[in-house]
Image (tube, rainbow, N blue to C red):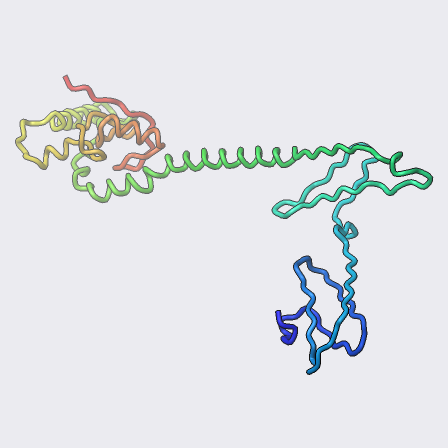
Length: 256
């Protein structure tokens, strides 16, 4: 850089005749020394540069340890750079350099770091398992079942008659329920296409629309899906799309 520009120089001084300038640099970087002649005549300049530098300053280190006990243990700072400076002891008085020569073998281990990796991996695995279970539990209740109930409520209205009678009902109500169930089964088996495509759609599974409605839920007794879709609803801890009661079991309806 041009010494004439003050904004581009770290330090500048005007020397007349002879003089000395001392500069203290605290940041490690590349620095250059430049000399500019402000006179109109040519001059000869002699520059002597003396540099006193400290390679590693251990005064402000956050941990110091001596190898008098044979081992040193300290906690490294997380998410930050850690530097280790190894210094040898000073030469003892009355001994020569040859007598003080020793070979040092230093080994660094990071066992606490590996332990942290194992703990973090376990936590991530547990989080993924919990997320998968929550997804299985709520995907049917929050997405699939509300959509089915909203779009096909008309087709479900004709299937509100239960296939199972309540335990507290008497014989007459049980007979009436069985009579209604027989009518539902007749409608499920079909009447040779008398009602057209609308009745055919009502006999199909309200979830997949591929298979016939061949199962009913317990304890409510509603019949709205095929056995495969009903099993998936039970595995997801779902509820009946009609009465919103919890489904404990799915029973298959066999047609003879």
